[in-house]
Amino acid sequence: MIRYIITTLCLALSLVACRQQPQTNAGTATQNNPVATKVYYPGKGDNWEHRQPEQLGLDAAKLQQAVEWAKTQETTQMEKDFSTQEEIFGKLLGPIPNDRAGTNGIILKDGYIVAEWGDTKAVDPTYSVAKSFLSTILGLTIARGMIQSITDPVAKYVHDGGYDSAHNSKITWEDHARQTSEWEGELWGKNSNFIGHEAFGKGERKPRELQEPGTYYEYNDVRINRLALSLLRLWEKPLPEVLEDEIMDPIGASGTWRWVPYYNSKVSINGKEMPSVSGGTRWGGGLWISARDEARFGYLYLRNGRWKDKQLVPAEWVTKATGSRGPVGPDYGYLWWLNTEGKAWPDAPTTSYAALGAGPNTIWVDPEHDIVLVWRWHYGNPNELIKRVLAAVQE
Image (cartoon, rainbow, N blue to C red):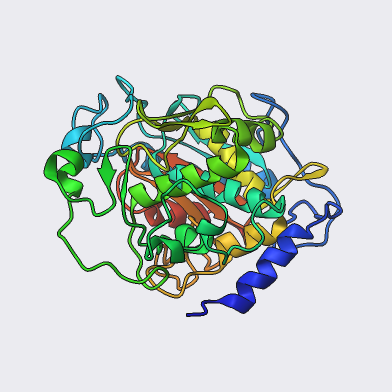
């Protein structure tokens, strides 16, 4: 079955051929405003300018009302001491903190901080927001020519037994990125079917018939963890180091973040033991990071993968990952949540997108209004805050 071959082949070719483009912007260099003069980028760490909302076309009173409302929306999903973690998700495979921060957030307009509340420097697990970081590494892997095409079978590159079966051998990199891989097997002590109450807690699933790769969507951390392991095999370097070298250091992240592996997720590569990281914190470990560093990552995507004079992530990857939904399943790109149908966040532009994780944890990016919103440990759908923030935008 030939799936999406024209568009994905074009993507792969464009990523491999990607060259740095001259910086453009008239204060807002976004997909919708590619012609301009100057773009603000924060300096490293705390060297980040604040601006009054009215300086950037926002109604200060309405924005403050949005922030005050957000402060009241503490999550009920996750206890502060993570005491219900195993009850919700099943047996832990990695560490979990003793506590977490309360609800907190940060709002960027044109790259400047216009609002901030709570402890935005707290380093907490961000759960499945980590999947969008994995997406970024996949884009880099293709751009470096380590993968020729996103539609290539993973088995063409990875030979560790994980793709040897007739079923798994059909799985492409794109299938993994769309959460349609249907990879079958066990990894780090968890089976891909999510069968077993002790292993999966309330997340346990009923048995179902396995579908052809690429034809069925299922949000599945075991399969995403398999993607992470496969990327590790290609880079032959721990993915946290890849992320640090290629993304986090160049964007001036604080250095407090860490990507924590499971206790048992180690493999030998070229005679060296290396950790394989996860796409979430469902079973402990995962990406532990501050809201401020997440805001930098969201801002990198708002700027189409460019930071100052360097194209860190190919612009073509940003466009495809955050703007093109898959043929099956929800409004989902390449490990990014989309709003192309206007259903995820009805009050937001259809061009907006987000990295989402349990908690809930949210990095929402709005190219139309040049806004990045990070909101952590909040209650309910982020649309309720989004609509309040957008109400402050003065036309």
